[in-house]
Image (cartoon, rainbow, N blue to C red; front, side, top):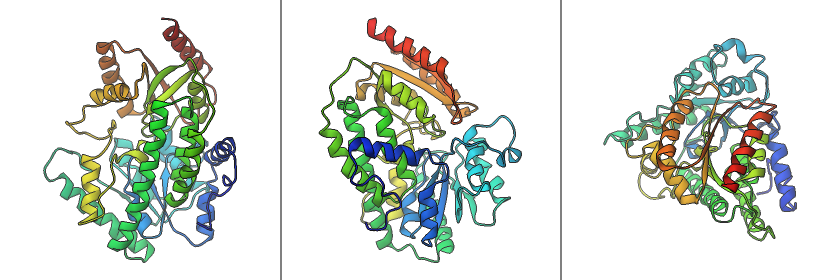
Length: 388
């Protein structure tokens, strides 16, 4: 690619790449989005957890993962009630404060608050603000056909916004790009599981999170450069506890919290930004592409507190994640005021207790500036495990 939205990482050492990714991840002004718009591009913002970005990408839009930011909700606070998670307020704050400009916004009925987000957003902006209704009963025989219809509906709105027809050829090309992106992320996570001393959970997160702010072609280029450098890294194994981090499916923990955990533990697997890795296999490129995408969402996907699938009991999926990654313990977290996350903490801890797997429970908020108490508790937790 010649015109990069994020090109400062090029010709850098691995440490330099991490530094550039962190600088972009911490920049609440989203310079890559501004650069895209300056070049005449349109932007589709979508709320967590999963959105079929290939549809927007095929129409020439920049899909932007709206996952909040560490900003004060100065403008958006008056649009919401008090007892809501931070990500809702800060996501809207980004547009109300003119940090981000969108041409379309999509949310999902993952919780009561998110279900109402399109209506709140739509009162403030004239561009399309809608809900993608993902299947509530993933086990129904009609789910795939229903979801295909939802994808078709969203595709029509995207075409109306862009004035571009999403052809099968364009969608197939986008699927190729996204299939490659998911393969590269799986490769990165495989290193985390098998050789976590080569890349910390914090470093892997930096490489992953920038993918939600740039074109996937650019992200693929970044990952294809960084992964070989990671594999060749002359790092030595340390005496750290292997843990699974659970609770980052929607609102994201502060970067410094992830860094602090990575200093005392090997994060060998997690659900951070799980929407970027939701599809676990390549989506087929032949036949009805929208149906292939719908089928992949239902049949070739990960798990989350916000998807209700009787075939994927969340506590069993967590235990499987722990077993597959060789983790010795789990860190079970939830964003403050996150109803799905806090409810599943009870389910998770019960299952871990029954299996005798050590765990740490905590809450976070994206705007947290001090978590000394949590950090001290985590250090005590890991030290006790090491010496037990």
